[in-house]
Amino acid sequence: MASHFKKPTHIISCNICPVRQLSMYKGIPDGQLDIVQQYRTEQRIIPAKTHLYHQGERHNNTYTLFSGWVMLYKTLSNGSRQVLRYALPGDFLSFQQNLDAPMNHSAQTLTDCTMCVFPRQHLIDMFSKHPQLAMQIAWITARDMALGQEYLVSVGRKNAKERLAFLFLEIYHRIHLHLPDVGNTIPFPMTQEDIADTIGLTLVHVNRTLRSLRQEGLVKLAHHSLTILNYPALSELAGYNAEMLTNQPLL
Amino acid sequence: MASHFKKPTHIISCNICPVRQLSMYKGIPDGQLDIVQQYRTEQRIIPAKTHLYHQGERHNNTYTLFSGWVMLYKTLSNGSRQVLRYALPGDFLSFQQNLDAPMNHSAQTLTDCTMCVFPRQHLIDMFSKHPQLAMQIAWITARDMALGQEYLVSVGRKNAKERLAFLFLEIYHRIHLHLPDVGNTIPFPMTQEDIADTIGLTLVHVNRTLRSLRQEGLVKLAHHSLTILNYPALSELAGYNAEMLTNQPLL
DNA sequence: CGTAAAGTTGAATTCTTTCAAACACGGTGG
DNA sequence: CCACCGTGTTTGAAAGAATTCAACTTTACG
Image (cartoon, rainbow over all chains, first blue to last red; front, side, top):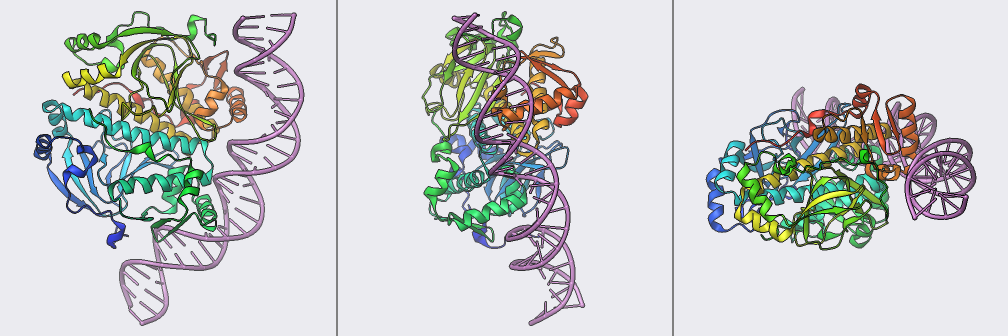
């Protein structure tokens, strides 16, 4: 269970952890942030390849990711897997319709992660005492839903190259929201099998499609590091519009 | 632009329109319901095959569907279409992360519909004055997201027969939440092309797959009416668990 | 009754998967 | 330090699933 990610470049660092930078709290007045801090129980460091929770299990915590990558996925009855999304720093995890029901998906860290843990009960208290925070959750959920819909479009109506291009750009843009200065090379901790389970293809076909994108000079993906070599061409391929997921609105 | 649905059996009726039965308001104390009623502007009847809004347009209204079917979909740059979900009575439409941004999808009625219209501005006023309603929106959004994730799993990791079985059961179950007594035959206003754009296949392949399910005696679909003939077999095929989308939780 | 939309079918093609086998790389232990 | 092992990547060949193209039939509706 050792980490595959010792090198710091593979971890999106957020050591300072200014709560204000996390999307969940963007736009919240300072007074309310203090409120949130009161309910926070602990900040936890979790090694790579660790499950936070499993589909079908009841789970009492809610998380805000400070640093690292988390993969959210569902398992089918036939054993196959579908990745729902990758959580990046600032993302809020494990909120679902019925907080007491078993989790409808699993969450596994891809890299070492630091996360802030909120017990569900605290979350519920917090919402009842400070209902304005509920609107924030509604927005976060709406944003996550919009992202999921983009994935659905991709898997439902695009071919292999287009899906791969879309995934790359989607991740690329989300990383740039947090680290505007990373440039064209970003960490990319997923395996080709993870990618396959994200875009609805097989591992083998992802590999071949990747080769094709590489040969055309669009991207370079090796050693868990992705370089965007021809952004315009990739963007054209993916049918991707960057404004898809900007940030929080104002009430 | 005439309605394809004159026959009442094709419309899920909800003539009484008891606001309390709609999922958005389930579990809300009576006092709060009166609040909601204050902000409601009008109840509107909209004919079949009409767009409520188009992707890319700014739109100032929010809707609660009282009766009828609405199809929500996205259009790709290459002209193809991906259906995101079908809205049924009680569903809440056109809420998105940034209420002022252009709509990220389109909505078109499949049947004649009655809907309650809330201007966005009223919605915002309502949330700031009665923030407990925001939590309700968060739950609705989380539920819609969970449904979208099931679609993603279906399109990403199931074959044609499984996807079709899933779609049928998903609709079947949601209809039964509103009309527990409809039995095994339900209205099904979508064309085969709509179905294809929902489950990520072509019209032709949907037709062949449908024939195969029919020949195996699992379903009958004709004249926009769907009959589930072998529920256990379909359920097994779809890998479907009925609890997926039950109703609202309690705070 | 005529027309447009929706449904049906066959044949050929393309895309994707499956199966199988190598290869590369990092980490571990001798 | 090197051999070994497991995980992840790469490639080929054959099979399978889904699409495309094209034509035809049926249904809905004015």
